[in-house]
Length: 475
Image 1 (cartoon, rainbow, N blue to C red):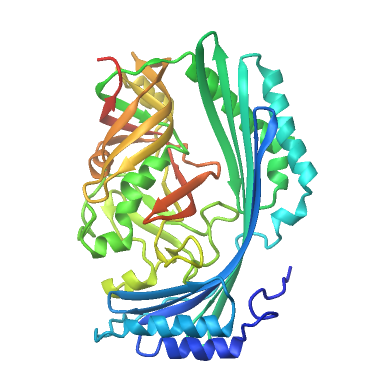
Image 2 (tube, rainbow, N blue to C red):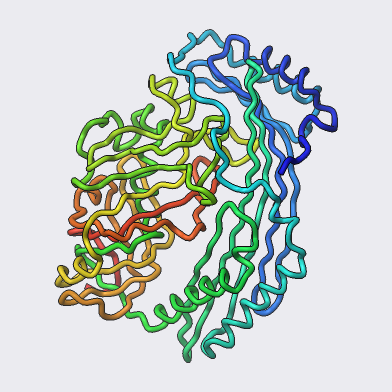
């Protein structure tokens, strides 16, 4: 489906003049581009039996970047006019401050090689009344399913963006990006005790997959199941214990504790625990970590990144050996390697930087039941919540939102308050079994870095960690 050009088909921005201005702005620079974006978004939150929040927004603008050596000049504006672009050009020309040009011999590919998602606008395809009816149905469904349900919060959100990236030599790349997400939280109570559980789903597709009962009911069921598990949970133990991590969303630990440390900017600057270690053993044998932005319809996927480079499958760690980093154009050029399609930005008002897309560990041959049966006393963490990571050391702290005791090789009581503590490289070396059940998350991930947020995907198989520090309330 072809949509009118939102940047040059109307308004006060002329394509030929924009290219001349861009060429002048980047004269003498190593790299740079004009990034144009038009975005519409909406969000609805149904909470405690009524629609509490409803918002919609339309934004557009440009970002103009010039790069020379390690210095970047960036200017942006919500005004799409030739005059605004000329003012931005005069700002970024200041990057030419006497630094020598630094370039690689290999010019990265530019422009899309295939489309990974539809171009239709999910916001316009479904009427507001139908969206509201589904949110009401979710609330009624959960309250009818279990009398212990005290509160239901359901959030439906979407955005649709169109981007164009122009280079000084006249090349142009464009992308149309849909994104939808459903989040459900259920609060249950039994006497004076209250607990909650949450679940979600989403991706780069239309609303239909979420608004049909076959789409939202499994999400609602999962939120309720987690809440009821937590309602019967006992205090978590503390100490160094074997830990079995569940498949799928638990890959968020891999994303945070390992993935960020494999981003090119941290490694070029020497601030990552993985800096200068290409070719070294950085994880247990059998561990292969991949970042792949080419999955169709996935939340973390992109046809092109925000510099116009096609996304690709990047093997970062293979059989425990560090093979490479994920790169945007600037850090790739300065490190003398090729860009990997990982230059991402939150919006036209932000500079691109190396960011993950869909990051996951490949599966192995072990069965989860075998891992659990091998543990005398330990923890099974089925679902992880938020965490904190120090990129330089790789140290992390993660909360387990759904976890159980393993006793004599069997899963027993659910526990709450479990915190997983360790360092990414250390834990990667303690992986003693890799499951055959690799799964990606349901499409709910958002990654923050340097004040910017972008949608991402995570995934992994079940893993047996031979020893990990568990923070809890009982010794």
